[in-house]
Length: 423
Image 1 (cartoon, rainbow, N blue to C red):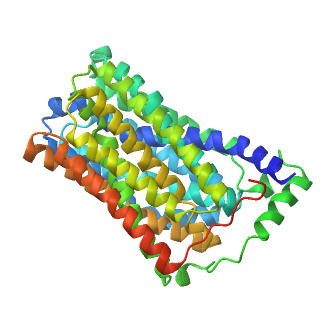
Image 2: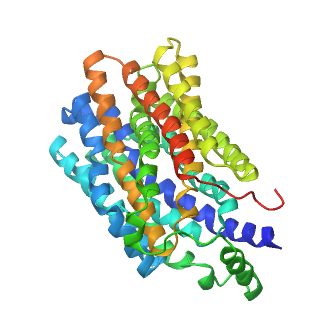
Image 3: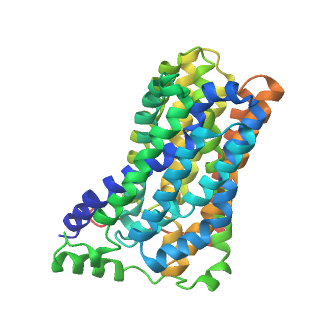
């Protein structure tokens, strides 16, 4: 009965949340595809692109915690609708930038608009699923990163071919057409997304009781209020391993189209190769999260995935052939996404209610400063060395830091995940 109810909730919620995150992530990283032609039009160097690409995360940093606390107070449906409306508008407005300065301003505003979405979803999933099965559902949700690239990469390549249609450049069409779904999905949120199990009309009373009873049977959370959460060293410590994961996620993700382009592929070919990398990553992520849930273990699963990811990125830095390099990049991104998916089951194991909303957002906002550092480092090192090898090596080093620090955090502060009943 329990598994059937949670499976029903997952089928109703997860695909829709994935759709929202596909739109979100696409609006966040499509600047990487736009750069294939935009940088030349706007006279943007590699170093400057690294800065304007990462400045998104500065806006994100300042507004993440208050946004997620508001979500917990007013409900996910209304606040996620607001987030999507504003980020869709800002994303479409990026089509009309005239230089690196205006691009940087709109990237910052996109971070402000989008702040609270990802940690809000992690908090929201905690309202539905117990800790023992949470990694698999977080992993499924984060497959949207892969889907955004699987779908968005080839589509972005095609849109770039619209150069000259109605007097717009291909990269301008990219921002307009890929920002529209976010705008319209905002209204779908009001119709489709309940604030929690108690508001879900598609659950009957017995099913709501099952979810409520299972969540109430969870071990008591250490914190439910905001201020005591801020004194818990686990909250601050978890931002360190997450920093290394985010460094790789966006350092590679934002530059991946240009890395692949540098291997000799056409714009359309770049889309296909990037999609293939993320198909492999999504499969690996789901399997790894299932392994974590069934073993009832989190820390080592994060560490092992991070080491695998680091190995792939470092190997890509030293490979010469295009096929071997793509294979190494796929391993790198698979390890990165698997690590972050299991990682996000940790905060809600000791945080509840407002503490969970604020704590998840705080960890995410601190770690997402790496979303600025990763693209910047890649751009700076590309300018300094003339290639991507040094940058990939540094990002791989960041994942090794993740593996070491998560093991230290786990040993020192004592995280434990209960095994999922009946496997």
